[in-house]
Image (cartoon, rainbow, N blue to C red; front, side, top):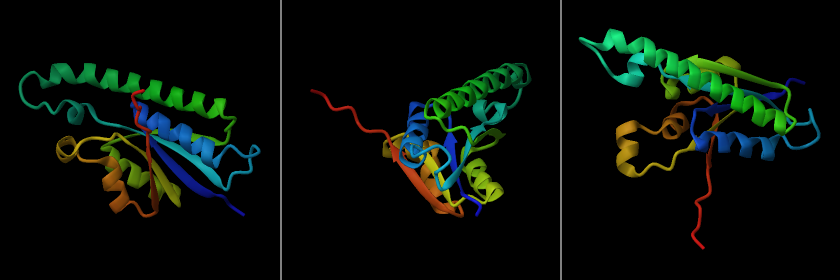
Length: 159
């Protein structure tokens, strides 16, 4: 019997790496190979033009540097996610980077891999920042063709 696919969306935030760790602990910590899921970790890398939002004079000079930095960040994020998986003894994992808006890229990854679950972290933005930036988790919850699990990093309590 084929395993169901679980896609975990990651970026370079602590929130998404926490969501990956949480997912591994809760769904993959049983005896190796016994999880009911096949794991696909997806990093959505924005394009240089969307990351900068620049057009017009001067944009052409800046974009190659932004693109280089985005590639470095993507490589670092993917390496970190592989390290997290290895530390949790999860070897059967696909880690991929796709270019595009994370909201669309994650929904596309769900369709591509025929996933039954999409896991995303929650940045915990306030209402204004969420309205301006758009919540990836909120978008995916409404548009992904599967169940969506939003993992929230616990708040640090002052003692």
